[in-house]
Image (cartoon, rainbow, N blue to C red; front, side):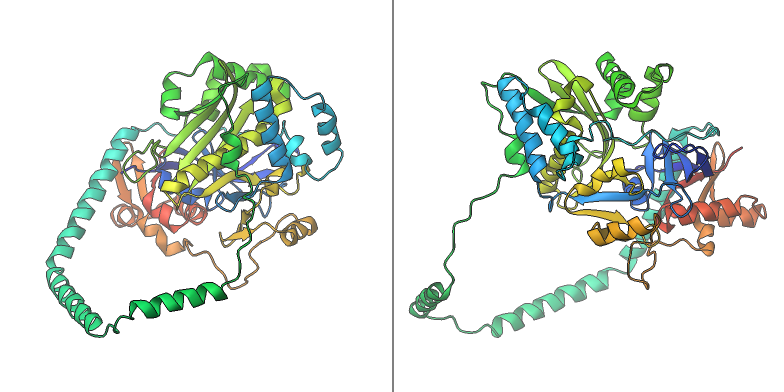
Length: 488
């Protein structure tokens, strides 16, 4: 069992990466030493997002550019005309090895307003800017030791629960078996007599005659159809390689760093001095998610990964993703600007949706593709809302709402909205003040204790208000399950 360990930093104010305003972006932040994949799934379903080990949740009601968590139901996703155009362009390039001479004209045309410019003109805007990290540094702790303490405690509680269940469970099992046997007899004795074969054939013929005639419908090509059209005669080979973040940390190749640096310089006009290997690792390689692999996970397991796009022997793009119990969450995407004509940002999104669809075949619960934040007030970031079957997270009730034209109109009128139209709906995972008693505190490097026991032994705790604020932000389930580091 993976244990989540976090240190809450409180409210943060910084420069905004969307409107570029200074000291106007408002959020709450925390450092995650370790996060179980299940806990992180619950956190992003409450509006949190990670960048390396730093997790942040925008204060949408007061920040300059409200950020709504957005997801797409990959099993309900439908390709648009421009999606198909991008897929065909990639397939044509792989097949012939040449750029279409009409590409530049077509791209210009779409950017001038054919309605699909989001797919062709967003090449430089497919990834959110890195958040500004707080000045506060996390406390130094022995993560492995804290995990061991938490696991031992959980094991003791589980053992006690099993013993209690066994003591009172035998009678219930015997009674249940008896009831099942009786039910079986009743069902058998009440079965109606079987129809004669002649009568059954007659009824089938009559039903067939009355049934409406079927019209052959041409099956529309699926996303998978477009992505599996490669041939041995193709001029270029595109290979997608999924690499666990744990492997990347020990062998971060020069090719990955060089690609990231080139992308940031050309597309985002970043400061060259900031684009060090250590900086890239901090944002895009290091992760609080522990790689979890078992018979209950997909073949690659849960955790953080890089999806590397190799064109022949050249790395042309990298998608940083988290694979979680209910979703694939896109963290960042960067690519070689020399291949912008292939609309790699959108192509990468389609590849990630295909990954969700593939995993969902064996694990139906993992069917969502999370795209980070939808920022309606920032025009260049609205492209995320163009994917079909997309939903926004209500920032007050944490219920998912379909992204419709009606929702867009509401956001046009006012940047911050509740989104959920049902006035009586409330947060089902709400943390209230009395829930503070069960929060697990790490007050020194080697001891973990619940808030209630601490107060009983030591007396009033100065950080109570901060713990309550944190609990309301992460929700009751995570507040009780995660370990809250409170060390100076």
